[in-house]
Each structure stands twice: as C-alpha cells, then as structure tokens.
Picture 1: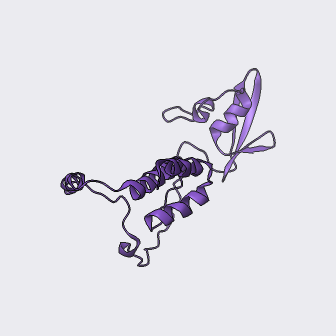
Picture 2: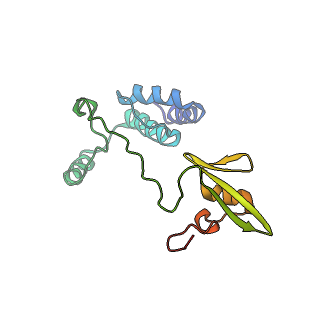
Picture 3: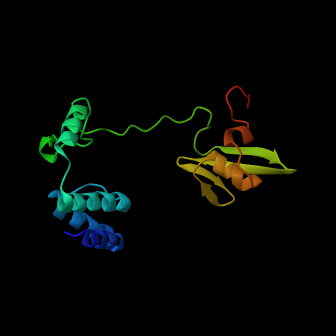
Length: 163
C-alpha cells in the first residue's frame, strides 16, 4: 500500500461514524473493542493500517517490549472466556434510617421568616410547602428564601439546638 493510499484511508476514518469505526476496528484487529471513543478508535485503526502496510515493529523493538511487559499488566479487562459467569449473590437494599433531626411524618415545622410564619409539612418522602412537594428540607428552604441554605439550619433542626 502506498503512503498516499494510507493517508487517504486515515482521512476517511475521520469521516466515519463510531459504529463504522467499530466495524473497521474488528476488521483490522480481528476482534472487537468495548470503547466508543472515536478519537481512540481512529488512532488505533490508523496505526494498525500503517503497520500492516509498511511492516510491523523491528525485532529489537519487540524484544524491548517483551522485557517491559514482564513487569506490567497488559490487560485492563479480562478476556471473555475467563470471566466467571456463575450466578451472583442477591443483594438486599436496606433503607437508610430516618434522620433523627427530623420529626415524624405528618408534623408541621414552622418558622418566622421576614415577618411571616412559614410552614412545611414533613412527609414520608419529602416536604410539602405551598402546595408543592420538595425532595429535601434544603429544597423547601430554597423555595422559601430564594437562595440555597441548609434546611436543618434554616428550620433550627440541627443537632444540639433545642426545639
């Protein structure tokens, strides 16, 4: 293969989609890859096309690589035939305990803010204020104040603070 045809093929790689590059990679390397990084695929395919056309590494370079490889881990992912396909143990999701700073669901937390009383109702899965349900006390406090603040601090629910 001439240098101009190698350059033409490398230029064509840049125009390919990721799926086309994955197919081309499999063609030149004889195996697929898990990566979807387009730049990496282009570089690897271009290197392989050039190596196939102009010859691979010299014997001296191969010996040096073998010396270096003796002390290095070459594979990041194990070959598919070595992966254990035995059934995995089932795991059970355990809900996190409720925060002891929060009162029980159904409780209404009140606070004076800018000469008005604001109220937030504690729900099992969030906090209700003004007809809206917020996922966290901080989100409710942000809706009230217009800026981010710690919900426990805003409603004086921090540990060590008497209610």
